[in-house]
Image 1 (cartoon, one colour):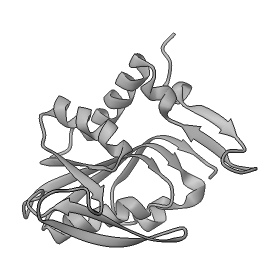
Image 2 (cartoon, rainbow, N blue to C red; image 1 turned 45 degrees about the vertical axis):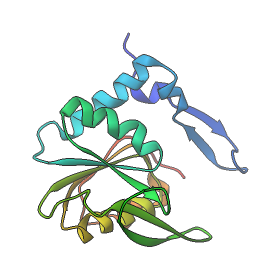
Image 3 (cartoon, rainbow, N blue to C red; image 1 turned 30 degrees about the vertical axis):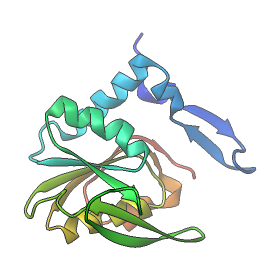
Image 4 (cartoon, rainbow, N blue to C red; image 1 turned 180 degrees about the vertical axis):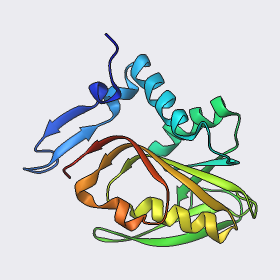
Length: 175
């Protein structure tokens, strides 16, 4: 019997605090079949989509986005924390639960008019990927789809990303 992608996700109750059900994706990564299934699933989300570039969110978006880009023969662009990219960048500051953070992309990473798919492991509050959409649009790109392995629906990330085409392989109703 074939396993489903959610069979590879390990749920840890009460981590990092009581009442939280932590969804651990390392179970997907530690199993060659699980990892292949995750990439197959993400590729399936974009197989009929017209797009030019895949952007991966630091750092787990790199794990899933790079193999997708390789398989689909598309360029792969990094969205990174401030100070990690060596050439001229554009940046956006965004809110975290406590404070703010800055994400950057190389200024030449997206060309005006390019259609972009953004990939990350998880959609929770949506703040990080919203910041990446702003970077793509600042460079003149068009975000055509957002792809995630996991979604924590109880954190309302889709609301923050309203207006974008959001796809997730697995959706958990809680937080």
